[in-house]
Length: 256
Image 1 (cartoon, one colour):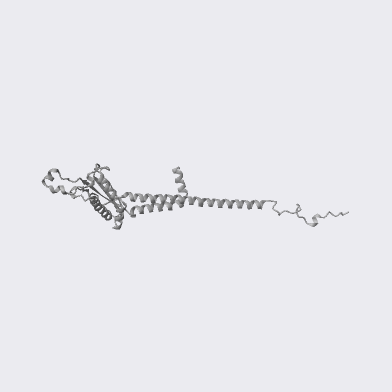
Image 2 (image 1 turned 135 degrees about the vertical axis):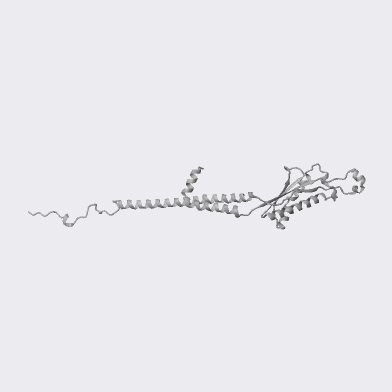
């Protein structure tokens, strides 16, 4: 599509296009300035391996040998397994329902940190306000701790044999997520473009209708003029001769 042709068309249909353009710009500006906003906060946890009693410690304190060491994640050859399990439990639909019942934000994501590997879990939460985002992330942190405890004590393992967590990046404030506002503005702009082209189409139709009416009126006027100028329109003498007076039709009188 030729941009100059589009500009010429818009200018030709300016009385239809300009109101739509102004409305689109005003709507996009209003959405950007006064539309709903989204705030985002993040917290990261590092999982720490348990300090298993050594043989020397057991010799010094034989009671350590009686502790339940049945933590299934200590037997795993994959050190990241426990982090992946906690992430899966946090991202389950039940977590979203739990947050909804507490009136918190329901948009969140738990994923591995440090490039997607390692015993680090990063949790991100969004809210309509900065306060809601922070409240949501703190609630997710609590759920993280509870899930970490629950999956390791399934066989009654003692706390000494459990992985623990350390918050390595706690949120002090939530930041606005500009991408959500920009996305909304783009949607409004796309709707405005459709409105503009619809207005141009309406203007083209109105202009075409006016041209057709003028053309039909001109054709009707031309047909009327042609009928008035036609000598065979039935106004001539039926005998084909001009009307004359009776005296002019008599033969001259012989005076001799």
